[in-house]
Image 1 (tube, rainbow, N blue to C red):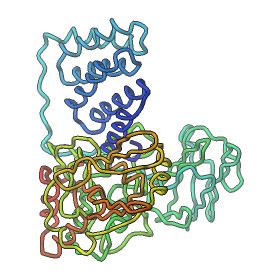
Image 2: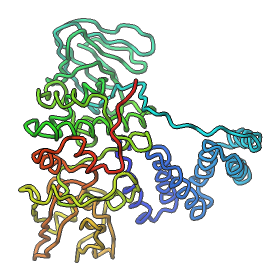
Image 3: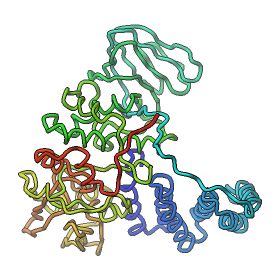
Image 4: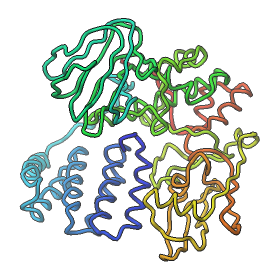
Length: 482
């Protein structure tokens, strides 16, 4: 969730619902599934279905309180005051000692007073407005030491008081020692967040240069260092890390639009968090100023402000390395319904030298990797698959072990074993004496744009707009308005 992987989190919650023996944990996982659809995927209808499933299946759990209250809030926001009043009233009756009892009283009264009033229907704006395009990128996580260098003085300011805590040029070392923060051996009386900036074009953080300014959050586990940079400058450090800069310009431009859309989508959902996105494969790989290339920078500038939308809202523009000849529907990967990311035959990824792969895992390796990922299934006797999607990807893996039968989704099995070795779930399995030989096609989850497909399309003279329309068929290319 913190990395912006909302459909992926739904897939994880499904595993908890299917496998946990703890009723409260299953209820919480279903609650979080509904919350994800409501808050992060803009699918209120599906959220209501999940909340009501929880209310029916897990009556009496703590999660039921939140489910009833959240249903009331969704109906209120939809101007359905009759249904909102029904849910808030139900909350009051069932949970007179509940944490949200007073809020339910207020919302119930508000809903009742509005039942007979006429409400104007909201008109969708013709243009997409994004007030703030600054992206907060987590570049250092839980570190005890951070080294900084700048050609001009570095200034550190307290967010609480506005006081300048440090202002000097040269090398700066920030360290956390026994829960005390030091800047070049100067003890800092830490209260709240710190901001760090320089008049220099860039600042080197652990020998890697970045544009923009920074915030410092100190936790008992270490220092989080966040780079604040405009989305267009952020993309200058993303595109060369996500796609080879030597690839044709049209492919690079398609990648720039997809990456911009994804970053702004996650930012829109992250206002209550200390950062929007991570600088690793957990989100999008970001290399800062040092990663920038002339070719990829040109692609970013040529598509400045262009994003993908559906019903005038940003889409979660997933992309992957290679589709293996068929892109995938998110519901088959993560059990999450994202209607604008539909599965399509991908003829541009069929004939590629990077399509086919194989790898071998011993049974001992598989058991160890599953256990490390918190799947303690036991010693494997047999391993088979259950079902394939239309694209040919495996939906579930069934394991027979000394602890009995267990099922895990194909995608979570792949992640547990290592997605750089088990490159996709479009594979076959051959049982050998000591383990399993996997032979497969494609690389990645298969959702959204295939980067190798984009390469082949650009080589055959397709423009970036055509590439995007091919892979995001239900989306429109939109220019941001400020």
